[in-house]
Image 1 (cartoon, rainbow, N blue to C red):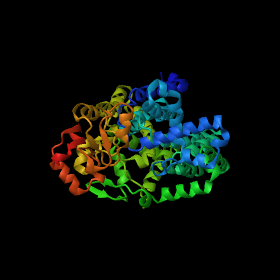
Image 2 (image 1 turned 135 degrees about the vertical axis):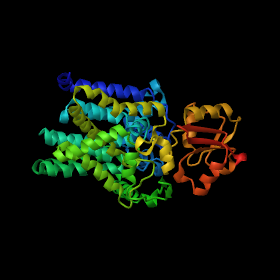
Image 3 (image 1 turned 120 degrees about the vertical axis):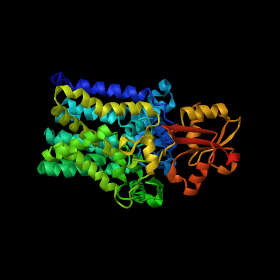
Length: 512
């Protein structure tokens, strides 16, 4: 069986891809529309229209003003390079008539997530054998935060998939002596940087590892990868064709000055931080949101692999440590749970795969089923139990979501919990033409109306002064202490809870 699996790793990899895509694809509409999705969807649609214009009227499409109008739409909400939105534009254009607009946009990250699971299996199998590949793929699929983000039309899943692909291509180039791998490094790195600013750093831990592993081959391949990456980054962004200085200066300044450009608060260990958080935030949150079985295997894999100086373990540990170090920099943004350093989790999954291999060999045949069950069954049960509220998941290390609330972690943050039961209650109970206020942004609920999931007679507003009803997500970082105390005293007309912890509450304003 083991020999068959390793001999047919490609077929098993594609089966992993298909199973993951099916699992995510069948649940794409379940999470609520999140904060960033409405402007991303609008931008993706404009990019698709630009491509049509390029085919029908190239002169008009290649006018500088037209390019910036269609590729720089609502810049404050779309400050990132366009790769994630280009992917969504492609799946929207090809699939919307079959699956509908919302699922069509979200199909892009679902495909990339399925590709990531396949890559983890193939990479783990190539380095350590089929059981490690299986453990890595299962770890990715069963991490609730990753699974939740795979449903959302945003930048996180594309970024983590492309960052992982960059490292995998570099490993292949060095460990398998394939110079072509450096071209793939450049393509993946250019696309990662073209997704979001942190993607620029995808090549850094790989370069450091390569110089340790094989200085000569790395010194030969890295400049070629960098050149390809720059060309890819330029090719996918029409704004760079016409005004590279404007785009690059603005992008770099906004990305490195988030505290001034877009300061967003974080609630951590019972305190609200306007931007910067304690140095240990990323380390603690990594442990807090990883299922304990996977976290334990990753710890075992990292410790034993570093001791044995396993090359891939060193790359994975180095990448995780690099991400933590980045997040300790004074200007690093930390808002939205683990979203800002989500790229470390695939490398944690690979370490878990290596840890599973070590445990698999240590226990012998009789204990192997028990190891698999202990490592992954609790994560699978929890994932099924909490869906579609994966972004509110906390692991056993902090006592689940109840323990996280007691410890003072932020309960939720991105409006994904305003879905199913919440929308059903609003459709059923709110008076006709009621005015509804959503703190933060009204755009997700307005898009729910456009997609027919929320009654269109309801007036969704961002102005609290005119509201009759208020829909509040439990994002403590954006609620001053006095506001949190006041809301705790009020009795909501409706409350959505996850394992006894409120995620969303709806209040009638006259009762406040």
